[in-house]
Amino acid sequence: MKAVVYKGPFEVAVEDVENPTIQHPNDVIVRVTSTAICGSDLHMYEGRTAAEPGITFGHENMGIIAEVGPGVTSLKEGDRVVMPFNVACGFCTNCVEGFTGYCLTVNPGFPGGAYGYVAMGPWKGGQAEYLRVPYADFNCLKLPAGSEHEKDFVLLADIFPTGYHGCELAQVRPGDSVTVYGAGPVGLMAAYSALLRGARKVFVVDRVAERLQKAQEIGAVPINFAEGDPVEQIHDQTEGIGTDKGIDAVGYQASAGGGTDREEPATVLNSLIRTVRATGMLGIPGLYVPSDPGAPDEQSKQGMLMVAVGKLFEKGLKLGTGQCNVKRYNRQLRDMIIEGRAKPSFVVSHELPLDQAPSAYDKFDKRIEGYTKVVLHP
Image (cartoon, rainbow, N blue to C red; front, side):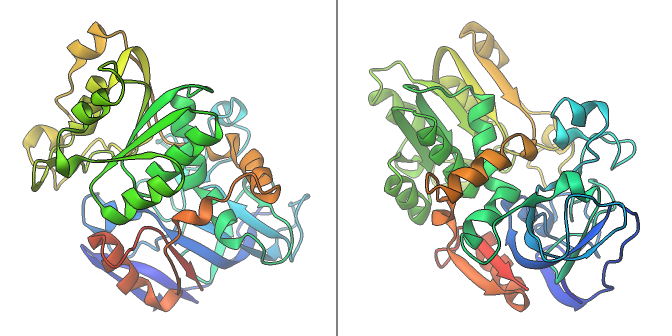
């Protein structure tokens, strides 16, 4: 089958690889119909992780079940399904408590597994024609048959639940004001989710015009940090108080701003601490890593960031962090899509065949030609 394979920094290729097979009675094989490129994939693509050449990328996957293991009870061939990016067993302590992003079974020695991602276990990615799904009764979310809502449903694998998770971490409630740093796909989903949850005002901070335009289209207030300190811009619009809640949808590859592309890994965290009012809440779904070979300084290379803990304490701020436990949210979000209450596919800028993946990675990484979210169709 064809699959997107990591070759080295800034290089992927579509190559022939072995078809997946049933390896356990609880496996299914899914014929992939849609698979998305995630901003998290770019960390590997850019050589900013310990990823070795040969990884098959792709953790945002959906499709049609082509083969079913003998131990699977709730699924059958022909079912249309979407899979959380978390690979989870469903029976370990963390899974039972709902923390499927931190499964203790699927990646021995490390809490959590994912398809096609460095250090997240042996699971092949789904930017391919077929995907093996383990513990399939637990990991597959069934969808209505047909092709309706394809672009919406594929976002249930990661970015829609992850954006919603950012709001859950920040405890966004009806009537809250919210600041979201980052207008990439997850940031837009966080802003959208905040509005779905009843936030009265949502600011979105970025500097890419196309992204800020999308934020404005969903009813958020765009803040261009290239035009001045975003904290001051937001304080000017909140009577100097700041917002009730804040969400970091950027992570460790944050730009320092000020007309430069220089990275400053802690800048969003510190900006949030300044932005959110005293006793407010921060949600941090943006990715931070324990080591970063491309970091701008030695401390950051070891995952040690200069964060204003004193100001955090002084303001009595609370925070929640960590990757999304997709199964906490994907069923209700699926049903909101089906009922017409949510349409997250507004973030999708391009739908392309799988063989155009190398060009799509290049353009998405460079943020050019309106590339905000790419869905590939094998």
